[in-house]
Amino acid sequence: MTSESFVHPYIPNTAPASREAMLAAVGAESVEEFYADVPPALRLNRPLDLPAPLVAEQDLARHVRGILASNRSTEERLSFLGAGTYNHYVPAVVDEVIRRSEFLTAYAGEPYEDHGRFQALFEYQSLMAELLAMDVVNVPTYDGYQATATGLAMAGRLTGRGRVLLVSDVLPEKLSKVRDYIRASLEIETVPATAGIADVEVLRTLLDGEVAAVWIETPSATGAIETGMPAIVEAAHEAGAIVVVGTDPIGYGVLTPPAVQGADIVTGDIQSLGLHQWFGGAHAGFIAVHDDPRFVMEMPSRLFGLESTDVPGEYGFGDVAYERTSFAQREEGKEWVGTAAALWGIASGVYLSLMGPAGMAELGELLLARTRYAQQALAALPGVELGDSAVHLREFTVTFSGIRAVDVITALRGQGIEPGVAVDDHTLLVCVTEATSASDIDRLAAAIAGVIEAPTSPTSPLTKEHGA
Image (cartoon, rainbow, N blue to C red; front, side):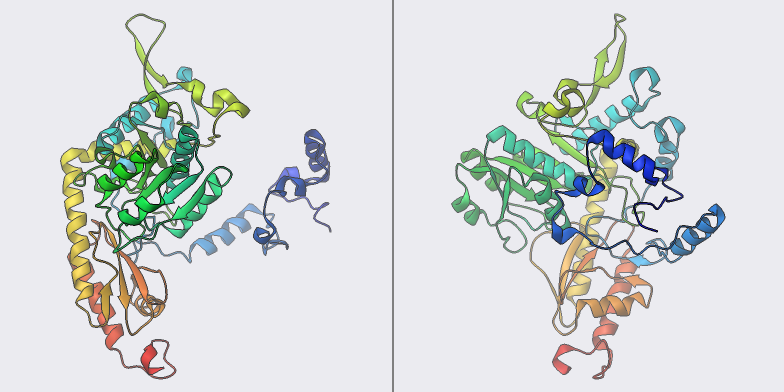
């Protein structure tokens, strides 16, 4: 049976007649025409290695349950995993609220069928604006990667320029996604960080009339807090460039928000604000700007605000400046924005309302303290050094001089510990949150010490390199 004649029991549109009718409707000869822009290097060039479809629903359910049973969550293991998805505590009321049918089942919604969703998102926007010291925050977009890419695209449109200078360490996955998103109009040039933070002097030599934006990540991919932002902002603005910051908002109960330091566009992900890890995370992106029409009108995402109705004295919640979006402009829009992650915005709104300013301040102080405690505990071990001297929030790297990072991971997994993410052969990215106790950190340090001190043999996977 050829792929052209195969009808998948779960996908009725795979029927040959249906396939031909859809191709005829769009004027295409084959499905391959839809993938013409996908580079050959990214193509699989073979069928997916999938089992034959299980026709009976109970057989399919059993098969899927068997696959899911192999998962181990961070609730079952002691986890120091981060790198973009974090194990912060989610209050029970957050899940309770977003399970309500008027939120859980409302994909888009209109005023005549809205049951509080627009107001809930307006409250989220307001709370985020207060946390970030910004004026305007969007309804959440797909994820933080898209949000930062959109912030850079906005800078390109506002300046009419084509270069971006990246001055911070950024997660490779995020950099890849951002490059792909803006590659048609912007080129990213990396300025190597020094001791974990931006090298402002090198940046000054690269700024010119072609630079649309200076991109700062804080915390960086390794958790470093950028302390030179005012100087970066000053240099960028002198060159006519816009400062775009990619950040995680979890620390701004104690840290100075980028907007206060002069940033023009602040972007990031709200996963840390009341969203679970869920084997990859619930993610949603935010874009924040000052109350400047030039910037607001470049935002492609939906904005909800308080609006007057046809009845004098009555108000409701609805779209603000809807005409700037691709929903209104369609193919004439400046940038297309598809599915919003609105449900996660409601979740973060509930989280922020529960925490309040005092709660966010306490959380930020705790994260800084736990991070420093973990750094000191691991740096005290023989053959272990911190990756840099910067101030860190939640994440940091350690370098092993006599053993590979992957060997540490393998050994500790056997003890029910996920010690972090291997950055390279000798470097481990470690993450702590408020869910990580001091005793958890002590356990991690003791386990790593045991691996370092363990007897080795030429055939052991933990053989130290100098003895191999």
